[in-house]
Image (cartoon, rainbow, N blue to C red):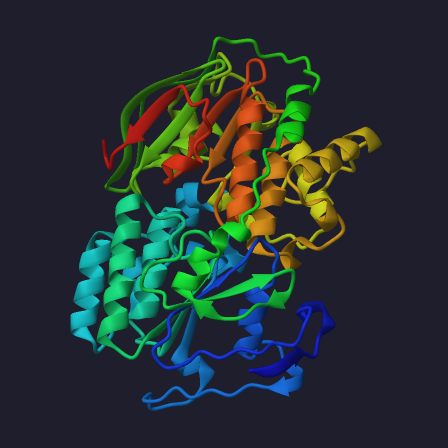
Length: 477
């Protein structure tokens, strides 16, 4: 692309785009959340017509020269599966709404490249997923499915937006090794869009930084990493942490020593056992790290605690000292819980101003149906400031980057000062700076009196320093 300028000013970068991907290069496009990485990629692929400049493609030795045939793009939302418009929050847990959902095998289809299919199936253990309904997959399993389906089409250029997030450690290593091998064995060239600017895989040859809507100079991976320290500013967040610690406490009806209690809880879908006779007690003030490989039942367990899973009413579960099904409403439970998860992010297709998305956390709705009081809106704006997204207040949720969306959903989880904070992969898609900032926000919040935390992550370094307990889930155990 030479001096490319998008026709639509709403998707236009700050300066004209000059870009080239040469034969044999494998590129990482890096930059902070909201920098313009996705806008750059979409412009290069012709999604946004040009007002000025030109773009040309040469996909030799491919038989065709169309972008559609030669370039495949896996975006952040795509990692959660297809048909987002028909997906609703909690659908994954409702068995009666799963009957018409396609299976993994249905969606993978057939391929002539038997050797590649066998390699992909072996690496990602796809055989075990073929008969599974697509909406029953964990976020990590969905990522494996989407990557397998895309790689089976043998693209000339494979574009991936944050491909490693949502995968457990062994799956990340497998994916890295697979991509590394693929780059050596075919004409495939890989372009990664990365928020973690300090985690560029070693098969990448060049790096293209994007900051504040400006496309920087392409440089070798070595040169980029050598100069990286100049771009990673440290922020100790001490003022923000102190402000969180100084927040006033709200009176609560719940003073139970046991916040969560599960007695012999088992969850099954058909002949598949997700959780088997699980006993678990989370006491007031404890900070739990919940871990396990993809598909081990972490999100299912959290759906029981949050009353999103219908099977929770057939299980022996107590929250805040009250047994489930003894008369309390879902909303009585939820008003004491702050929650963010991949399922929530996937279901949030409301194109509302960001401030309204944050404010919807006051009443646990998908969208804003009850107008908050002025003092409540002030609290929402304060938490937006804490998470560094005040400037997004009036922007539409679906027009901001996926990383900025995650920050908004995090602010939504904190606005009601919850007694129980449940964070399922909260740092998904965040850049290096925001990952550090959010981790310190979580640590400060958890230092407050009687705050309880349950957090899921596949990255040990994402856990706050004040973790007190751990639960490791294994498949069907």
